[in-house]
Length: 188
Image (tube, rainbow, N blue to C red; front, top):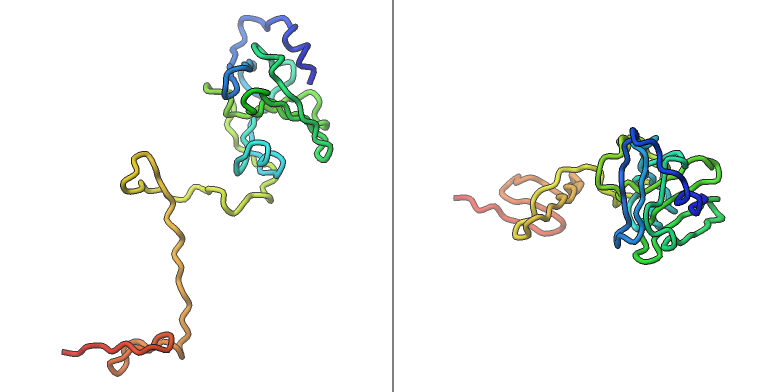
């Protein structure tokens, strides 16, 4: 992405709505034209590692609809030869800013989390879903954690142990045989 030219571009027509975003430290500020082209969740290993998360949520925009408003000199670049992509990030805080793929030279992908306002697209697509990690939260019911306000947790899945019929007998004759030990039922 020729970021140098982005800052030199003339601003778009005033009738176009804009959405603003920034990195964690605020050194880089971005602007896109509303609405974004599309949005998706990327479960691929490179995106997981670049974001340090179970998956990354991106919005895709036409290159001509993305502008760097502030901090052009604070943008660092990483060329990934394996995926033929370029990732750009803030050189101060390390926040991912742009993800560009060789196969889509006219599109720029930006992490959705950079924008506090609506971008005009909901992430309804999943890329590399076959790489979904088993530790990823999948929408299970969450309950408040007692004694820790604002913290919720997911109950562990029930572990039902399979019992062999020969090994376990239900209180037949006043006793229960389980795992080699004998438990006597008290009869009154």
